[in-house]
Length: 208
Image (cartoon, rainbow, N blue to C red; front, side, top):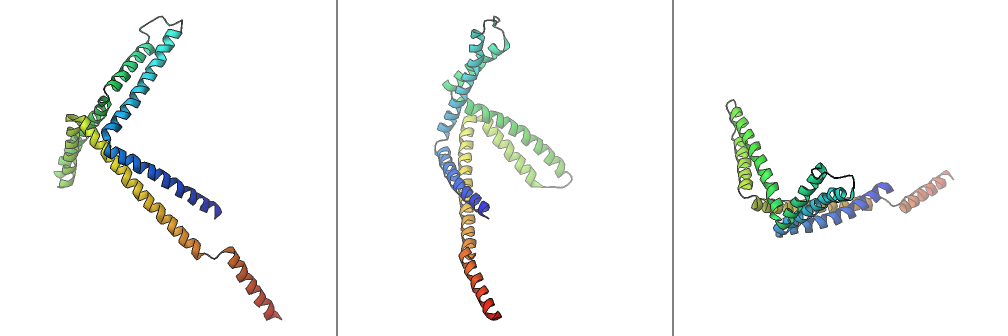
């Protein structure tokens, strides 16, 4: 029982801390989506530069490396340059990811729409057609204006973080309250000992 109690207390504290952090992150994503996308781009760009520098430095420090067309060296150069481009133009990453996602959504929506029409030949249902068209339209929006689409997606992620964290906190407080109610209803060890002592005393008197 003590093990479960300790686990509940630990989970209660951890949930509160993580939920509060996620709420602040969600609010920041909701209010400053462009700043978030730029920050992500800077992090990715820095990572690419470091990743590219490793084989470049290795190439020049290794005396046996004489071929400038060596694969690792060439990949390092391109990775380093791409990292610089991402840092110089941070909207690039914010545009590429939504663009790829938009293309995928268009393909996925078109396939689903095709199968919806096939199904409707046998049993008519408007829901699959509507859902497929919505997916197609969302994909087109991301392809036509990827960065603005990324901004909206970032805001939606922020809203999701906030909603999830609030629900998690409500559930956590509910569990904690239920546990406290059960705890107050349970007789304490001292009360149990007193009751047992009184019962034993009455039993001894009855025997006399």
